[in-house]
Every structure is written in C-alpha cells, then in structure tokens.
Image (cartoon, rainbow, N blue to C red; front, side, top):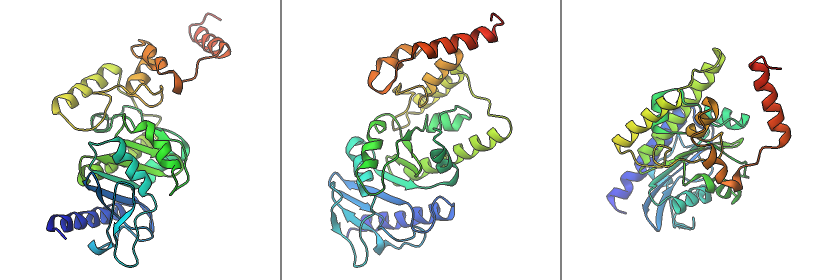
Length: 280
C-alpha cells in the first residue's frame, strides 16, 4: 500500500475523531470518503463509531461503490451510493463528509433551509444550504434526492436526516461541515433573540465579489446563480424581500421546479399590501 494512501487513511480517522468529538455524530453515525482517482475511493466502514477508527478500518471501493479492498469484519459505508453520486456529478470534488450536527440537523428536521444572509463568513464560504427531500438511508432515494442540488451548492441538508458537505479535499469538506453547523447554531440562537438582521442585497453582492477575488473553488451564487426557488438562493430571496426583482424573471424561467402563483394567492398578497399601506 502506498505511503500516501496510508496517510490519507490516517487523515480520515482524524476527521472521524473530530466530527465525533464535536458532537456532529452519535454512536456509529456519519461517513467520510476521499477520491484517490476516477476509479478508486477510500471510505469509512459501516457499523463503527467514527471516533474510534484506525487506518485498517478504512475500505477501498470503485466508482460504483463496489468493494476493492476491506479488512475482515469491515465493509463500506451503507451510504456509499450518496458519495458516489456526488463524485459523479461534481468532478471537482475530492472528498465527501456526511454527519448529523445538532443544529444543522435540527433545521433539516424542521424543514428550514439555511439561506438567510446573516454573517460574512457564511455568505462567502457557503452561499446557501438547501434541503434535499427525504430519502431512505442506504437506498438510491438519497442520491436521487440530492442530485439536482449538486451542480449549484457545496453543502446540502438532508430532510429529517443530517448534512452533506463536499469539496476539493478532505480538510476542506470537513471545514464546510463545521461552517454549516456554526451557521445553523448562530441562526438558531439569533432567532431566540428576536430574529437575525439580514444583509441587504447590496451587502451580499459585495461579499460575493470578495469571494470572486479570492478565487475560492466550488459552486456558489457568486459564480452561478442557482435560481432553483426563492428559498434556496440569497439572490432570489433578496429580490423577493427588497422588491427590486432582479432575479424574479429568471427564477420562474426555470419552470419545472417552480409553481405558478394562483389568482387567490395574488388576491391575498394584494390585500395584505393594501392593509399595510392603509388603503383598505
């Protein structure tokens, strides 16, 4: 076994300890993978605590998730299909981390995406974190559920399940998981204080420009506007909130994933606006 491969296995074990010690997983939860080349990947085994792994625990699989090498008593994570879908759809990705961080998972259980622009670091590093529809673990339901988000986001919440982050290498993928959880915790706690003060669109765009100048890798609204819907994009949410409508047309242009507004909804919105203006 190549020394470099052994070092990567040790790094996976170290990250496993970090996610366990930071309360991002319980018992045997979570999984980690690293891409060695287009046909070879290292991944954590199923049924073991990620906080107590040693290099001999780590399994090797091919691009189909099939076992290439695993020591007796170990087999690849049951969620390997989810990891392989990320690598398939995002050739730039070198590592995937799945965990159940408490605050981020709470938002996933509540069905609330992490899209409010409340702090510079989150806007620059993450952009927005949508929620993929619920899928049964270890089946193709989760890979199918996340697929449409992969070209546009570098982190995804899994409805009623956890969080998924991915990046160019293992440390970067793990750091994104830390960022997601920190963002979720701050958002949760600021809601207890009466609600966060969100950045306006001009401020968000200035932060996007900083990201562009930094040349950070990955997919982000600074480089490609998602426009999947008004819940999953700073740009669309800002356009919706400040009434300037910069992205309104392009949001609905995506069609298949957006529902048209009914006449009753228009009437209700009009009624509320008139009430606020004192015209009713």
